[in-house]
Structures are given as C-alpha cells and as structure tokens.
Length: 312
Image 1 (cartoon, rainbow, N blue to C red):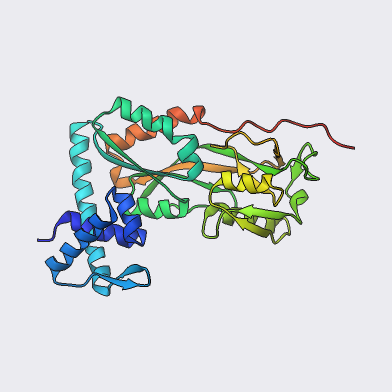
Image 2: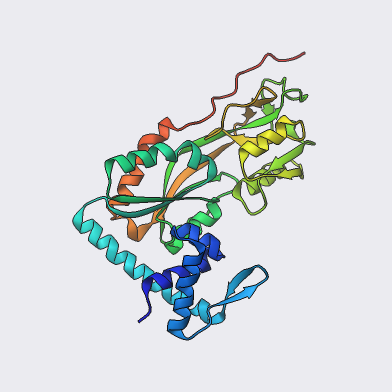
C-alpha cells in the first residue's frame, strides 16, 4: 500500500513545480521531500522524477499517479472535515496564503489572534500571487487564500471554491518628489501617459492590471523596471528612474524623495477570501474567516495622500 505522506510529497511537487517550492509549502526540507519521493519510487518500482537542467520534471507515470494522489487527498480531507465538524473544535493544520501586501498589512494580527484563541491550531502561511493561490486552493494545497483582483482584471473563481469579499484597497500614483506631476493635486490616468514605469513581473495580476489600465487610456506602457516587492519599486521611484501605481494596503511611509498622488477616478482592487466549498464545515475555516473580517478595519494601510496646492 502506498504511503499517504509520499503521495502528498509527489502531489506538492506537481502543484508547485519544484522540490524546493513543494518543501516550502509542506514545511519540510527539500531533502526530506526528495527522500519521500525516492521511497515512493522504490515502493512503486517506477521512476517518478527526471533531471532536466538544474531541476526535475515529472515522468508520464508520475503524472498519472498525481491524479490518483489528488483523489486520495480529497477523500482524506473530506474525512478530516467531517471529524473536525463533529468535534466542533478549532484544531488541526490551517494553511493560509496571501498576496504580499496583505501578508504584511493584514495577516500578522489575524494570525496572532488565531494562535492566541486556538492553541491547538497549527498555522502555516504562504505568500504568493492570486493566480497561483486560486489554483492551490482548488487543488487542496492551501486551505484559505486572501486574493486581490480589479474591475478590469478579474480573478476567476475555480469550480468548487467559495469566495467572500473582504473590502477594497485604493491605489495611488507614486512619483519622485521632483517629478513634473508631483505638484498636481489630483491625477488622471491620461496624465500618466508617456512615462517610464516600474511594475511587477509578467504573469502576476498587478502586472496585467497596469497593462490593461493604461491600454484603456490609449497607452502601451513603457515598463523599464520589474520588481515583485512594492518597497523595491518605491526605491527605484525615489532614485528618479520611473513612476508606479502602488496600493495603500501594507505600504510603508514614503521617503522624503517620493510622493503619492491620488488618481481620479480612484482605482481600487478588491480583496477577497477563497476556500473550498467542501471544507466550509471546518471550524478552523470559520474561525479564520471571522478573524479576517474582524481585523480588516484595523489593517495597516498608507493614508490617503495629502492634497497639495495646485501650481500655476
């Protein structure tokens, strides 16, 4: 009989794309994941991973086994949900994921609250992009995810996944303090045409949103710099190299060489929570949703930019 832990390790490699990322998601070391898969290979007398370049890829046999592993893990989760619901206790492992600024500006007090109220709850956290998080929730790799999307760049809700809105987060134009637009009281998207930009890398939802927003204004954006962290983007802006659109949630105070200006109409991103429908009866899911709702008004966010005097 195949070991469940070894199937889980193989499934995690398939979902996350590498042994290292699978190990991080599972809370193991990469060598421990590799050992689990090696044991599964001996157990099944089948090669499951092939070396390719500096990484590994799944063999055809491994891909077939991953489908079986998904079905088995789903059944195991259903059993765990049923037992937890019967006990009515907030316990077990709860794996949360969040985009970077939510992980910084919202999750810390939520996690501290849950840890204090429910000592038998084991908390794990992953910081990721909404595109990947929606997939991870759907596949059962993550229990609950805080995601973002925009009115013109929507995040599809996978089948079997429930979505609950948390609130909205405003976005400002962030510019060097000596930029010609820095003295304006209010900016429009049209004002931002012809600029050099910093943006998140392709394949992220913030990247797609900026591209879509500027294209709607008739501009193909000139993206000179790509950085995942908004703090890095702000540092590049402060060096006078570019401008950016930066959300307020989790944003640290700006340095003296950088200013934020509001945009009209105000762009906002929608913040929501995703979880699997079949896990809705878990007391841990209900407790986490309540903690997120309770702490959303207390989130750490940059204030609305101060209105400046209009220059002649």
